[in-house]
Length: 167
Image (spheres, rainbow, N blue to C red):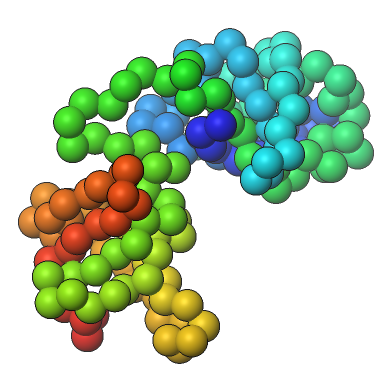
């Protein structure tokens, strides 16, 4: 499964949900017939009965979610699609979910930790890189741009960056 967004809140009283997509375009999730909701390894397929754009989120009506209480129970779940439903990314393009968990080091071989999240700022995407507890739980925000990200190896789960350890 590739996470493509998350359910952030109920919408109205008839079981509609607000979905915050992690897609390049706001309505990118509409391109996929099969949606799955859940977390980690606990996924279930759902049928999208209706969907529309509302401001900067999607509002969707899922089959079987018919009132506000059922919708509220879905809050916090992730929306995903099977990996084989996605197009193969071009060279030097990555799905955010493929970046999560990569070990990050800089050119001086200093271990920065692991990518725990990716978010968009408008200007560029930003990697959230955290060290483990044994290293003091340092969090770095590193821009995901060509001048900073030198190499990404999804298979080896590593990333090399040109970033000062003091930032």
